Length: 360
Image (tube, rainbow, N blue to C red; front, side):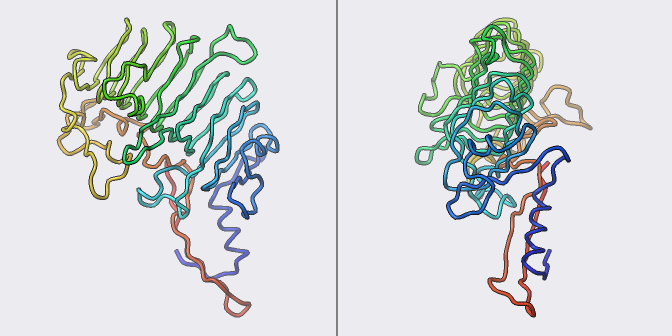
């Protein structure tokens, strides 16, 4: 689309594309880049200035937004990650860098998405939290997930004897989960790239998913890259274990794929699968997260639970109804192309060209 109008109208259009909030809530612009005129420059300042129920848009920047302990319900939306590797992402290909954060009682209903935690942690001390479409891994040289971040599942911050409930961890890249200290109920872990960082080694025996014996969890359509799963009486469907191990009893395994016999070979599970036949892998034009898509003829295609000829369900993080989204793009419109005439006048208004796309 190409428009010819004054810069004031152009800026108004940009605001409309970013999104509108409910009447009771407000959207705040947060940008840590020096010289940018935004509402706030750090996550802590935005938390102080925003009201419960507000939305914080963290814009791409080379400067970190810092960390924070949340005590109010907020929606935090970053621009995504690997932005220069996938098409039609953001015109400014910088992520929103965030340090470690915690969610305390009072922040129930909060959502964080589209942020880059670069090896940092999220600690959850309350119910009803959604962690969606974030990157946690930190690279070393050509190894993208040399150090992975962690999500801690704890207890109510105002009562250490009570576990947490209704936690959704979905569509994230490069993270492992620790929740053995308290019972978590209503835990959904779906369509993530999970595992220990490469620094642990391929034969790592530390846990990449460590849950309390009485935790109730549904684990589906994930890729487990390395490390050990430690759980009891949980449901595992449509997952791929690239390499790793499983301990615990009472778990239900259905339609999973593994490089060895971790899930067994009954109930739709497949053992001893050559992982080079599963994913498209690295190559020219293939992004860091795109390499985990299924290649043509992959044994994971149509191998998921409930799959039919007319409605196939794939195994892995790109399968099922909450498919992993390249670059962790948030489900709002993004401007992926922006071009403007540098100068203008009353007789020659500034020309602005933008291209926008919505990511479901």
